[in-house]
Length: 283
Figure 1 (tube, rainbow, N blue to C red):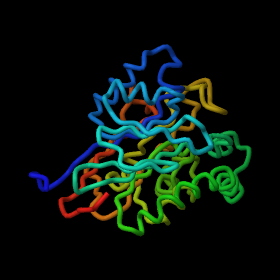
Figure 2: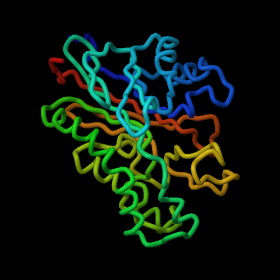
Figure 3: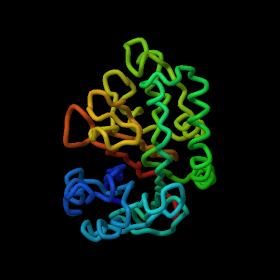
Figure 4: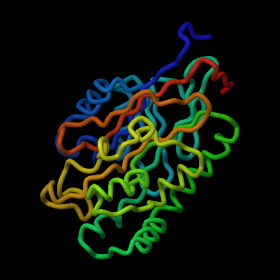
């Protein structure tokens, strides 16, 4: 039994961009960002073989996800011990009585449907939504098939990563009326599928007003995305990196997007969650 009535931890979903070293920075710089964020658990995307080295720098445990579509992209890094592993994640031991299952994904990036609206290639929402579904549904179903039995068993589950698709919670009637997202309300299929499976978008739980808190995570690096613009102001800024949670007692108490530029968000997000003391579960 913990002395404190609550167990709190910080979870970070972090796309480190081509292994964190592609643009010439040492891997220690990526580790420094994680330390600054005070993250206890990190789901890393685009680790490209650097996850275990990064975990060593942080003195964290590490599980590399080998599931498709992007081999050697996703890894779960944690200051907590790893009790068990899945194709898309790991079960972590928070203490002798509590465990937590953390899953990571990096879904297919191209075609990126918001560019269709930007380029006026097609403004028929139904066709764009269907294209998005065909692009990523089979990948998402694979990880949800692992997650669903854990949710039904009453375990705490977190799903994080780079979904390469916006959220239906962001492209709403309200945001459309305010001229955001090309004035369109779009029921993006990946986020709908996750929430229909009983998972909660942590950032939107903390910040339900999409107009005041858009939470952009794509992109601060113009020209490097598939179909991206050479100038940042021509890019389609959006929230495509998410943290979802399910299970009794998992309550987000804060969330933030962190990065090197206040105008254009870096591709990372951080969410703080707490587990009340009543959540006792055998690993």
